[in-house]
Length: 163
Image (cartoon, one colour):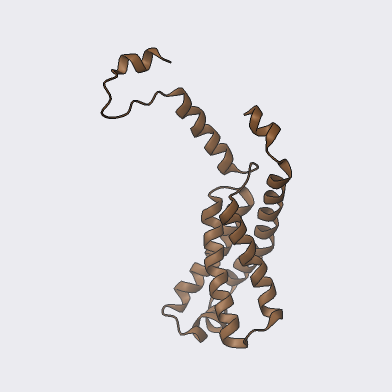
């Protein structure tokens, strides 16, 4: 633990925290707006793509933005939240290109959201997250529990005595 604190660049973890919180906080209202008028969203964004079940897919998009944003903000199941956001934003980019072409004013914000989700997917949540606390808890419990591999001749008594 002390080696981790002394040798790891804390600025990278602070950067991931800022990226997660700002991305989630700025994106979450898009999901709530979709939920406020799901029919309007389905008519404007899902039906023009000729996707089946437009209302259901509209709810999927809205909840992936809301829940994915909360997962990013809290750092719990962060990569799952980033994947949900990346999936929804990918469809939004496709919609923007199909309906308006390569319009930079439509694509710039979507590109930033997709880039942030991809960065979080690649780097993980960082030290300042609930995922890190869970990982530390499981690491601590696995270090205190002896592991006896299958097929070894070491009896369980030796494993317990080595504690």
